[in-house]
Image: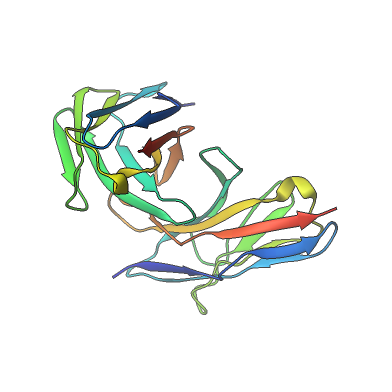
Length: 110
Length: 111
């Protein structure tokens, strides 16, 4: 079965600073990978998905970007964080028609 | 387009009460349907799923039946426990790469 690792688990960043969240997947090859965001008390918003190395689809225009430098590595980045970027970021991978989530990364922008 | 609508929470129940969380969907084609659970401070875990009409997904005492005629996938449990306190998300997936989630329903269970 697949295992999803996300880090860091929590971070507090000042407005205007850069961001890098990393996700790696074990136990599968060529997975579909996803970044979701969950704002406080709200539902899930799909940010990016990737079906292969270097292939990124963006769902919403925003201050964030994603990259997939290796088959099982998915990175979420920002050059300059905004207060509105605060939230819980979840990496996910697909197996068949089901997606599975990592433990998430809590980002607070101050 | 495809969408999922869940009952608004929070839902507050006493231990051993019966739970229903309503979920209805709009989709083209024949989606697969899911319930995920999110415990405080954690990521989402798959709770159960159903892939075709009249299928019943079940896990940990929770059940949901895929009702095509009413486009529903209501989550039920006969006797909730304090440890069931969490946020529950209904979701669907048709062909393609995206899973669409409802807004989530928070459940509080009191001892």
